[in-house]
Length: 118
Image (cartoon, rainbow, N blue to C red; front, side, top):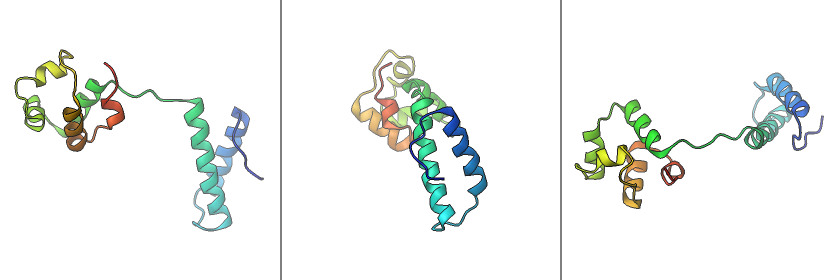
């Protein structure tokens, strides 16, 4: 079958079924190339059809802190703002560019999440 842009649920299901069949194909083989193409087409369809909203910046920071076992004092140390961290986490103070950079670099929270309004 020659693959094109997936336009509907029927084509999507066909692509998924074929992907299951060729999933273990060797890279560079005919089926391996088909696997790569199908993966891209499926990803494109899913992003258009089932978009995922970015998380709230403060919730993302809290979630990542929890994952890493960080406390407020750890974030204060990262930001160099001992007295302001509580205000940030309670949404009383906005993140500035310097804070966003430090949080991104240290906690690995994507910048596109951190720059969102909250």
